[in-house]
Length: 335
Ligand code: CUA
Image (cartoon, rainbow, N blue to C red):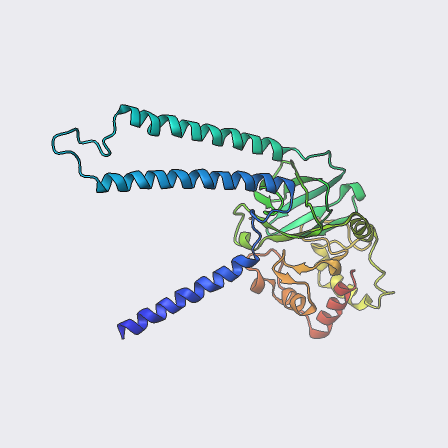
């Protein structure tokens, strides 16, 4: 009886480990680098790991040696027959050299990653909210505002201005750069560069409340021309609701008071409460990267966002089925 319970526990542990490992396979890694800054940080990481391993092996070796060796019957009761020279060498000189090397390398990495390799031409403002990311492109006029998805051109540095609307968040795209805090009342200037076009996951790296762990974003680096096309499309107003055949849904959007927190260009001025929905349907995810932006997920999200994301500031919006479907039609037309 007891052994079968123990076996069940073992199986559960193995299964849990397998599930965790599967999750890791998908997680962004600071060691699978895709940008110059992350590359420098990863090199430093490997050097520190190497030094740490060497120190660990040496200390453990001496400890084992000391444990195995019999002290001489009448000699001094020192552990490894050590004299002052041994202590000065291994206890003071070598640690001092190692720490000095680590200090120099760390300062060097800090200096290299602090400034971009060339002056960025594009600025993106990223504002942290509980629990999502507002993204603005001031160079494209004040009009381009999106959420939880940062598009940049690949192969060149982009200036980031990082701010917060409420509490401290921290911006981190592990494959591209280190972390930078987003502090209320401050603008932290940062930069990012992706070597190649691709999608890189970003996360919030500072505990900011109940949904901190689910505060994700997607950084999409595209070839220059694709990025320009994307930016131009985002600067456009969405298609007129009447022309798109979704006027009824727009009416629901206004009546159900979605408009109190969400801007849609041409309908509602920018707000800093909820994400700007002007080109909502062009985005890939919902709820700050938690779910794919599909009609089904969106329906469940509007009905009860707290089921997906407890602690979100968006209230549940109970609507009759026909109104909800019309609202979904409208949101899906915001391309
Ligand atoms: Cu935002 Cu943690």
